[in-house]
Length: 120
Image (tube, rainbow, N blue to C red; front, side, top):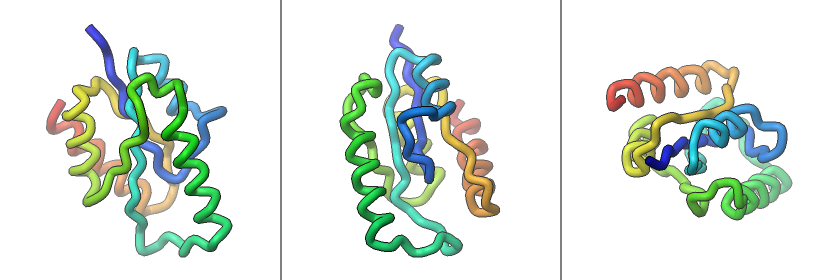
């Protein structure tokens, strides 16, 4: 049986030295990488350089051969529903992410954890 992990990229789009990605790769035969395109009201607006960096980082994630499941899934819509839908669609056994230590980030993670637990 093939095991699947979801790697939820939030603000940290690094491929190298990313403990959450390393854990996802270790626990599964296949890793589905997802990125939320939503921003929070408390997030500072991105300048041109930050938007360019983000675009290049997302392109690198999309082409990363370690995904072994092809491509980056860009989640749109309300979290945690879109994260749950992605995990269910890919029959994922685990979801990994890096922690965002802001109040909004911690609340988002808690809501995602609760929603994912409700579907097993």
